[in-house]
Amino acid sequence: MYDGAIHLDCIKTRLMQKTNSQESNQLLSTAEMVEHAQSLLADGMVDAADRLFRTVLEKDKTSAAALRGRAAVAETRGHMKRAARFSQKANEQEAEDHCSAAEKASDDALYPKAIECYEKALAVVTDNLDAIWGIAESYAALDERDEAASWYQRYLDIEPDEPEALHMLSAMGVAAAPERASDGYVATLFDRFAPDFDDQLTGELEYQVPSILAETAKDYCSSANGNLDILDLGCGTGLCGEAVKDLAKRLDGVDLSGEMLKLARKRRVYKTLTKSEVVAYMDKTRRSYDLVLAADVFVYFGLLDELFVSVANVLKPGGMAIFSLEAHEGVGFHLTASGRYAHGRAYVRGCAQAAGLRERSVNNEKLRIEYGEPVGGDIWVLQNPD
Image (tube, rainbow, N blue to C red; front, side, top):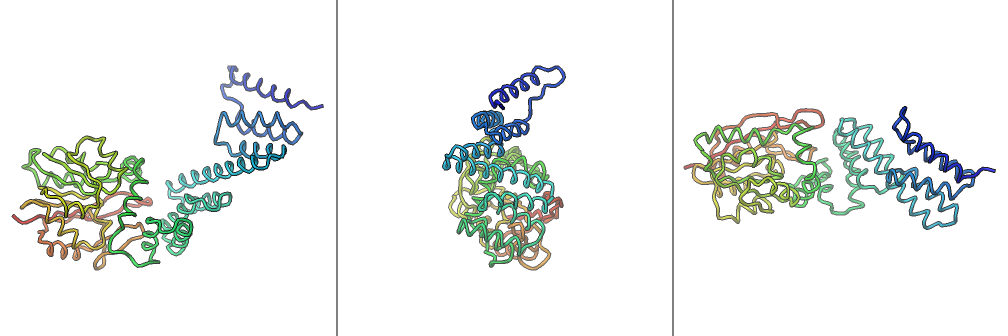
């Protein structure tokens, strides 16, 4: 007669042997342990199987196979509610595993593979929002906008009025483009990105804008000796503030994302940090500045006329605004598939002139890498007349 307890003891002995062996310091793999546990269960050794499945989960709590094993044990014992709980945990873990694989594929710009992995996640958890969003983003990256839009809509069917999904529907051309991105979209987007923002931008995206703005500011403010009052609009985690701190007597930052501001505060380069929409902040403040910086902030505005008026109002006479925009070859502005706006130079000039700002320069620069390709944009310098 087959003794499951003896079989379990043998496995533990093998674990000890592998641990102590000079030939191999690797433990019996969790996959091997799960296979043994499944054999025990098939042979009717329910208690021994359960003990081994639990041992696997002590080693690796993310083992979907072990969770399914415990579900099978509970079902064998007639504990159906317990079995359902373990099955749900197993499904959620399996979906998470597939999503992780999809994210890695997406990082390597392997979008069809990413979609395949996300679909596997949905096969076990049909309303997995990470998978639905991931598929939408993958199709957007492939410029298959109709398909992407259908997945953003599916996300909205589960999470009605979610600001990111609403905005991206507009970016896919399904809904009319708003005049600017909503506060909810901007805050939600950057709160979500905050933990990995610096690593992602300075690493895989090769983000150049803060350093470009800083060098431009130093060129135009060469006589400044740390005596400038600077406003960093949409300051994020403080990358731009860090780059210009040597120019500043006072450096203030404003951003809609509370999570970004927490990280900016840790840099200890700002006099004040305010959670606010940038136009609302400028219209309310009584302070004026020698320099206003905006690194990839105005790309979330389509219309620039009111924005530029607010910038002009906070600039001292002779003060300058230095900012980045994504370039648009056509007339006016355009909401791109990335969810950001691109602006034609003639449109920007018209808005600047209407606000009483004088153009000092505009230069095309490589801003970052996106979807494996360089993204070009314009670096503008506008000045408030003396």
